[in-house]
Amino acid sequence: MPFELRDVTARRGGRTVLDGLSVRLADGASCVAGPSGSGKSTLLRLLNRLMDPDAGAVLYGGADVRERDVLDLRREVGLVPQLPALREGSVAENVALGPRLAGRPADVPRALRLAGLDESFAERDAGRLSVGEQQRVMLARALALEPRVLLLDEPTSALDVASRDAVEATLLDLRRRLGLSYVLVTHDEGQAQRLADEVFRIEDGRLA
Image (cartoon, rainbow, N blue to C red; front, side):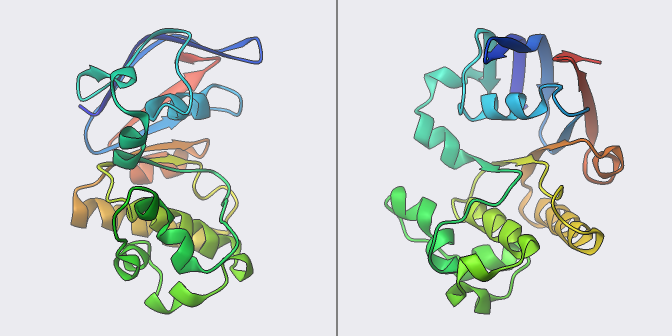
């Protein structure tokens, strides 16, 4: 199994966000669902050490994530945030950023294709894309690192229905073609049913 949380408590701003949470997220497609403020995004941040728990342990492949080099972990466990956060410059520069920082070449055309974008997007100005296109570039940027797992934080919340459906189709295709595992956070239970093998619901920081 990729991840296991054991009695995890996490606090942010003095508030307990996760309260003694224990859950196993298996290989394949898992979804963490629940209302806003329930702790879903905090859980996702724990998985690739954007934050550490105040108590308990987060395991990846059977080992505590705190035993892993944080940069190596984030290259293997890629995060696609809720809102696009692209740098100034071309799409190609954005997609190649992670591999460049890791000291290796990036196959930008492949990453764009996997994310459902035509290779011609490579030279476009990232700041002139639609929100849906920007979100796909964020996905391509994560895929350029060839991760084993994707963490997806409300990846379609800012998109219209057509763009949402296109991103969902891309995720299902990635799973089929690459055998990629992902953990999806969403408040849309219909999306959870469409994309995930198992759905865990969190309310007030606890497994419901």
